[in-house]
Structures are given as C-alpha cells and as structure tokens.
Length: 585
Image (tube, rainbow, N blue to C red):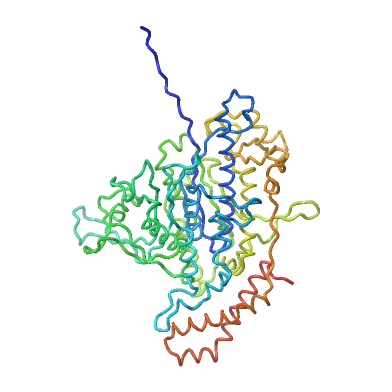
C-alpha cells in the first residue's frame, strides 16, 4: 500500500511594524491625521486582498496588480500627546465601527482621532480653551494642581475610552499587539545594588530611576486578562470589555500626557509584581539588584507626569519589544519602525559651544545638557541604532506651496506649533489644518518614502511581486528616471493607478486620491482678545489667589500687577502667532 507524504505549507512571514508617536502637546492633531490615513490605507488594501483570495489566482477577475504580502502592526509606542494617539490607535484598530475621516466622512463620525484631536472639548456651550481656562478646578484654600483646568481633558478621555464588547482584529493587526506609554515617575523607583555579594545593607548602593512605561496587550485567544504568571513578562493584559481595565488605560493615558505644571499630575497605582520584575527588564538580570518598596505596600503608587519629559520619542523601547517578540527579526529583515514626530529634534548646530562661564550661561548649558543626555539614555536606543538600512522612517510635518509652478517648502508647517505646541488649544481651525496636513503627509510618505529597494523585495516582504503590481506601485529615485534606483512600497495605496507618473483613481476616490495641502489658517487677534480677555484674567487672578492664600495679597495683585501679567501673556501669544504667520493682517 503506497504511503502518502504530506507537506506542510510554509506560512509567509508578515512584515512587522512598530509605530512610534512622539510628544507634541496640541500638535497631536497632526499625528492623529497621519495614523488616520495609515489605517484607511491598510483597510482598503485588505479589502482588495480579500477579494482576490475569494476569487482565486486563476479567476479572470483576479487583480494581479494587488500586492499580496502581509503587513502587521505589532507595537505601538507613544509619549505625551503621542501616548494619547497611541491609545486611540489601539482602540480604533480593534473597533469595527471605526471610519476614516475623508470626503465621505468629513466630520469624523465614528473616528476617535478626529473627535479627540480636532473637535476636542468643543460643544455648543463653550470651546476647548474656555474649558481649559475655567476656574472650577481651583480652591482658594489649596494650591493649584496645574495652570490649566484639566477637567476638559478628562472629559475627552471619558468619552473616548469606552468598553468594547466586540473586539475585532483586522488581518493587519497582530494578536500579540503591544501598547507602550512612557511616564515620568516623580517618586522614583529605588534599586539596591549589592556590592558585597552577600546582600549586606552596608555594602549596597541605591540608584533611582524616574523613567518608566506602561505596557499593555489586549485579551484574546492568546492572552488572558491581568499580569501574566511568567516572571519574564512585563505587561498587563487588558480586557476591553471590563470597566476597570478601561479605567487603568485611561489613567495611564492621562498620565503620559500630563504636561508638567500646565496639566495636573496623576496618581498611578500598579501591581507589585510589575515592580518586582522591572530589574530583569531594565538591567537584564535580577540577581544583585533589588527594587525597594515599603513592606506594607500591597501595590506601588507614584505621581506621574508627562512621559515626554524623559522619553519623548520612544522608538528605542518600541524596537526593543519588537525584537523581544520576534526571534528572527534581524535575520529576516522583515520589519520597520515608523516614528511620527510633529517636532523632530534637529539640534545639530555645531557652533553651539558657549565659551562664557558666568552662572547664567552655565545654568542654561547645564539644563540643555541634562535634557539631551536623558534622551540619549532612553531605554532600547542601542537596539534601535543597530537597525539595518531602510528600517527607520520618520514622518514629520511638511507644507509646500506652488510658486511659479514649483513646489516650494514653506517656513511654517504646523498651525499648532506656537507657544511650544499649545496654540492648537486656541482654535479648532488650527487643529483641523494640522490633522489634514497629517493625512496629506502620510499619503506622500506611503507612496514615495515607506518602501524597500527592488532587489530586497522578495527577502523583506517574503513574496515575489507580480509585474503588474511592480508597474503600478513602484517609483524611481531620482523621480521619473528609469535609470535610477527602483523602490516598492511596503504598504501600497489603492488610490494609486501608476506611481511612476503620479496617476491616481480620482473617479473612484475623488479628492482623496490626491490630497492637496490644506489652506493655512489665520486668526484675528482682536476677536480672540474680545472673547477670552475676561476669562483669561479671571484664571490668572484665581491662580494667584490659590497660590497666595490671602485675599489682601490677591487684591494687591489685582490692583497693581494683574494688567501687567495679562499684557505679558497676550504679548507672548501675539508674538508667537505672528512669528508663525497665523495672524490676519
């Protein structure tokens, strides 16, 4: 009797993505726009692939121009405003009701990115800035918790973070998906380092770590809710059907975005198991290093502020986790980290040496040095720096205008950038512009930047690309020069008819097929002052009253200094908006 030999089909390897979202205050609207377009593109491509799979490759209607490789979002990492967008990305990816904000959905219905970052807390009663300046969070008997009223931010979080009883995983989402949010721990976590080998307290040194992160997965058929039993696992598995877990995620998201002094800090409580396992993750070992927690503490509590203070661009920890989860990542070269950063650090001025040694010059240089060193020491940066060619990608704001038929880069890109990124809170139009610019920049990024070299396509995407797909989506560098180097996009945009000569399917997708640069907004400072003068003065006065704790001193401030303080604030606002070319002439 002849024996039958069965061969197992080798499953193609998915191309793994780590999406990192940097801090940006109100310019998080830009990051939201980028991720919104990315998700829309992945969804459209998935629909086309599913149609092909149903038809079969031999069917006459099978579309051979559709690339059939797989891309999976495996890690999300974010800090501050990027942490908020990271959480919104997690929730949106797993929500089957999510819809992109495009020509068919201009008001962003069922879209958390648009709702939280563009509409923010605007409603029929008041605008977001009015809520941020409201004084109902202040008590004259207590010191203020923040310069701005954080209740508005909490309401946005409460409306966005809701129970999801029907979690859905599209094919482009890993069931092992991680969400990582950075935090700055004001309490600090103390570690006892043994120098004797005998655990003697007299031979121990204490080191303190103020940086940290929250790491979450989502409950599914691979992961059970809670802290895993495996002692090497440093994450919490969320059940999006449980209010308590939604509350955990809410607190972590608000804490990573608690801009120092501007927005209030958050009290965080985490499992003792998490702290006990932290040395192994942080130092690569447990022996000789012991976290110090009070004996009567059943859990670890600390005050948390903006994660961006210590790690504003957490690509290092993102790729570290990606490597940890995928054993042959470096060998297969089937991965990329994409960082969306509204304000990328480009401090490369080699002439910054200041020979002056007076105390003010030294103090200024000291704080700059401390900030840069903290960013250099971020967790996982060595893994990130060891990545191979075309595995690190940056999406940053770029706005162009046509001058004499040529696309010229504008001096100002983001409307939310003035006042260190707080300007977006002033007006929805500023956030709307940045959201639209994010979508536009992402469209260009996916079509003409996020790609692999033609010679590396089969190895990195684990598939042979058909001639039809290559002709449709590939492009050359320099553009239009067939003698140049050829590239193929990692995530093909279905709105493209021919990337080589910029042809798109306008008949199917309308204006979304080739997004233009949004019109740069303008503000009338007189109208702004009329609306907010009284509210702003009241906020300043109430803050002073809470700080001084005396009605006599408060009266003195109101009589002698309130006008000067208000005028100083308005001067900062005016000059910042003017410098960004946002003021109406």
